[in-house]
Length: 336
Image 1 (cartoon, rainbow, N blue to C red):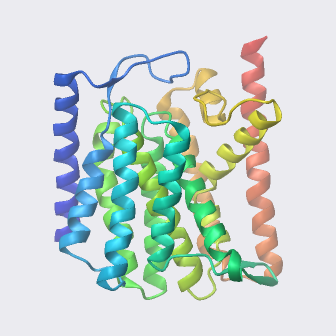
Image 2 (tube, helix red, strand yellow; image 1 turned 90 degrees about the vertical axis):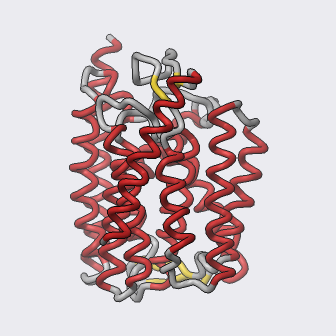
Image 3 (cartoon, rainbow, N blue to C red; image 1 turned 90 degrees about the horizontal axis):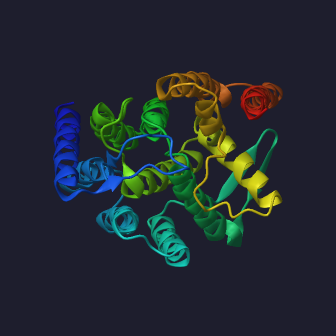
């Protein structure tokens, strides 16, 4: 517990220092037509929780890997954070950014975290030679989804906090204290950042933070699905579905309209809800409440029969149909 408190305070203080430094050298996220904020805001707050996390894990390596695996895992996280930092400062071409993301994801798979099986109600698929490819695809997807969804105060940090605590609970009930501590560490350092990022945010995490969280929590999702008895990849997908569903539906819609999904936009459902007049606080409270319910479903998913699992999946799907339809209805009203 002392280690977690130190990590929280370290993140809190480093984010504060980054904020002061950004103000002095005038490194801001300047509002534009696609922004959800109105004032220039300090950027790169993610440096705080990234450094705190990597420092703690380097000097207190409690994760259940050998040194080589742990070093590869840490280097992959460090690499994705570094490329995110450079993107925040100067901007990086999309192809180079994607190449680095694939390289970092490969590093995670070589550290021993990869999808070898996919489990669904009543059946299981052995991925065999597709294992590495699908693992990299999943990790690159989570990296970019966390980046895309980091658009309003406290949202990405809050989802990461709730998600990491849910995964920590899985580590606890499956008797994996090292993984549980890893997720509690994630929650601690993100909490330190959230002190400065909840509405009205005085600093944003930037790509350095969002891509780090995307890779870390994506890798953690694969880990629980492969090393915890009875837990399929469906469980972490449900946990993070407020991000995954919004991003997937929005990107699919943009592709169907011939738009480039990787370009900045305000088409996500949480952004549309904000445009209808809801404040940042109201939007994230709705999203966090929805996520809490989904986490409850996810954490009980593996304890019920196949039939009930299908019912759980149907209820999750219908909850998004209802929410997205309601948001779209509100959004169309303001366009008239």
